[in-house]
Image 1 (cartoon, rainbow, N blue to C red):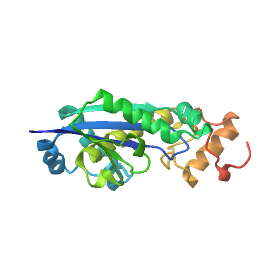
Image 2 (tube, rainbow, N blue to C red; image 1 turned 180 degrees about the vertical axis):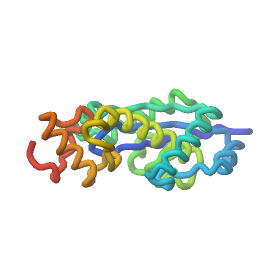
Image 3 (spheres, one colour; image 1 turned 90 degrees about the vertical axis):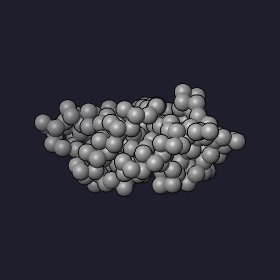
Image 4 (cartoon, rainbow, N blue to C red; image 1 turned 120 degrees about the vertical axis):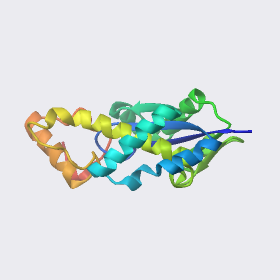
Length: 206
């Protein structure tokens, strides 16, 4: 019997800017070798430069054209609400459950043994670094990262003319800090896509 496997992963849990995206990709076990032949792997392994982004986009197009998938965008507002309630893990668990319902499969593989422990049952498995051991999860990681990158680029577009390119991917690093401080100084407030629940000590009191 050619069983189906659903891989689920996220991109953007840790940044201070922009959304988090969760993705699921359902694959027949006989088709897992196709993902391997395409070179699908953990999205982080492609890097953040232009070449890596282009490769992820190419693979995302292939995956979406050939497999059933689900993409769920979790906005900074939704993330803030759950972080304040100390419920970010629950947000991911609930979102994974939505994907599992949307894409019924014989086996489900989730990335994160402790995070997704509450969802484990006879057919749902939670594995650390599953995006490096299961091609269905790697495919989901590629979709999630591609989608988050595309959304982040859209959010940054209005500032290109006045600020320039926003580097740093929205993570809590020096390049992101330069943009956030510029926005505070010039606009008098944090960017609309800043996660206000993030206690960024480098930013200082606001």
